[in-house]
Length: 137
Ligand code: FES
Ligand code: FES
Image (tube, rainbow, N blue to C red):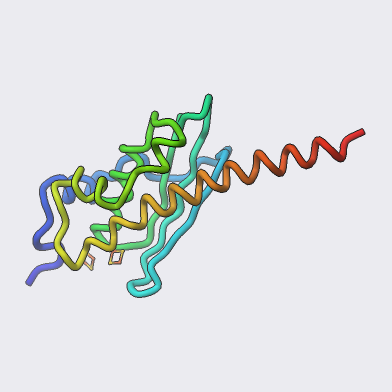
């Protein structure tokens, strides 16, 4: 059995041409996650403007499905409000790619989880900023 068998054309497309790969140096939020079982891990960075995800990038160490699902996560999230982005699920990602082989379904959790962590990190930074202001005279 060949590596990557059972992948849809959309999975192969996102694997071979990942969308929004890279890292935003001036990110407003950054989130990481990994799966200890397979060792795959990703980082998502976001730029937030008017409560929307204005820009998004990802870095990945992982299999074809991890790359494709994270790429799709960034496509689904771009331009969305933070609330909408928080509601993106692993099912949404897998469905948007036309499905995944059973043993690769867990890969679709990476993107939405790192995205939630990035949004949480954005909120944390804002509250830190508020705290800092209170200590200014
Ligand atoms: Fe080959 Fe993950 S796609 S090991
Ligand atoms: Fe575990 Fe892909 S094999 S995330």
